[in-house]
Amino acid sequence: MTTTIPSRTVDDVAHHVIQLGDTELHYVSAGTSGSPVLLVHGFPETWWTFHRLLPHLAADHRVFAVDLRGFGDSSPAGADHGSAAAADDLHQLIAHLDVGPVHVAAQDIAGGTVLRLVTTHPQDVLSLTAIEMGLAGFGLEALADVTRGGSWHIGALAAPGVPDLLLAGRELAFLEATFRAMTAAPGAVTDEDLEEFARTYARPGAWHGAAGLYRSMLTEGQELRELTAERPIAVPVLAVGAGGGSFTADTLSRVAGAPIATARLDGVGHYAALEAPAELAAAMLGFLGDVDAG
Figure 1 (cartoon, one colour):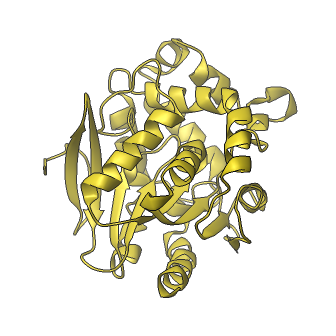
Figure 2 (tube, rainbow, N blue to C red; figure 1 turned 90 degrees about the vertical axis):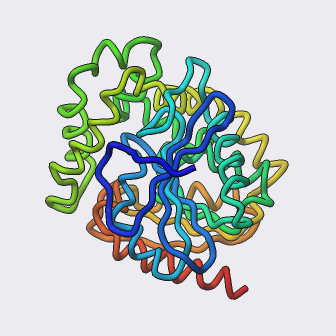
Figure 3 (cartoon, one colour; figure 1 turned 120 degrees about the vertical axis):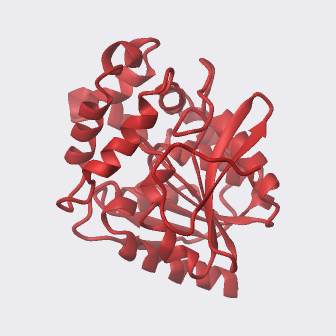
């Protein structure tokens, strides 16, 4: 069904909500022809992180950008939420879209989710574009180690009750500090962007989706190593590095069953879709075109 969502939007983008059991997923769509692309955000993001990228891709593709469960205008997540549930949501969303297998592009903490999707439901996926992404079991856990330069927010989000205690009423300040610290392009994250992200993170229970994905990250490393040892990624992979340098490519090359394609966005921080949408689109479109031609 199509619904009106109380958020900012962009031209030629339609908003939708679907019911998956007791959960509603919000997503947007753009473009009318070409192979389908599903965009999956990280943290602290929603579909809005792709709003500048969408027009670049929609000229040649049908594009969908989802709010994962517990994020944006999708339903809040439960206390037991994690990457496995998020992957199942994506599997059901792809079936609902009824456009055949899709090119999946995902970033940041969505890594565990899309890895589970592409290895357990390979029929859903044409290719995987990994943008500034790591994986539990392959070095991502180091980002939670504050004694070695890791980020405090991972442990804080994963601790039951702590996000609501620390961040309720302080959403805008936290988001501004996070985005400013991890972007390299001046002015790339605007006040409008921050206000839109803060609007959804201010909902009751709005940190639970991120909390579930970070708890997964801290506990699923051995499971993901075993999963990828048995079932390496079988679809074409593009690893896009920006502020993280070669980290994404180094990680994905360890879980793919064939050599991967790589792209590097120089002068760009962690949030590539906001900072360099045209450059990211150029890298993606070349890769997607090659996959479609093949």
